[in-house]
Image (cartoon, rainbow, N blue to C red; front, top):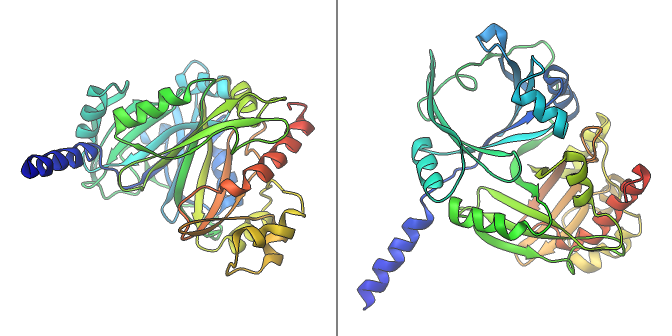
Length: 377
């Protein structure tokens, strides 16, 4: 009996590992003007030029600029013609995330394992080659028109991937201290969250590690529900938000309206020194949401002792929260484009593994003030 139990346990562990992931490879945005977008993310956020793809590299329908900071890679892609899928995506959604690319050891296996479990194929396993070696990629759809690519690059030594050339420029702004993708949040429609939770569980082997209902995330006017999905090793986390009924329109409803459907709401980027990072970002013109000053009157009563002085946190608008593992510091930008859709979160974890539940009310009130100014509350 005991042997059967051990065998069953081993089988269960093997089942969990059918899609081993080692983190985020890159995030690709479809945008109206990739050259200008690349300049913005370099100037404002401290990314550096990495690689370029376009007519000069044999790609005739688009241009793509890859930029990098530490382990964070963004790709900004624009269509060169009005009748492409890229152009239609931008016309419908505005600038937004199209690809959430994940690092895998075997892109063919990742595609086979996920599609046989119900994943809708976006790209069958495809091998790209150039003088630097070979890269294998595949992909499946997730919520809305968003895609998860599986990137296998163990046999590739080039600057980014085949089809790109090294991109050298005289302008290389200093880093702002951003390190890697901490998590990516998706907004889905009414009564769709459980469907996508099940999708991540069954298709990708993720598990639901945290759940927040409308009692956790609500103000006088609006509410939402959220569930955090994580792969087995915790390197990839995808919280999923769904609107909940409130007196007025929630920020998730506003997103769904202006994005014209489901999509990636925000990307959380980690730093080892949030005070230095946010100071530099603000100096470069990045705009952040601000909570009321009285938030800081009681924050230490709630979270206890922290290493940082409270004065610079208050000056910058950085929020603090604690869980059983430690505490975290976080702040959220305003939307990064004219449509009130995609934004960034800057986060520093001091042991905490959660997502700032204690800040939800203050954050939502700040979001609602912005919505009211836009006439969308």
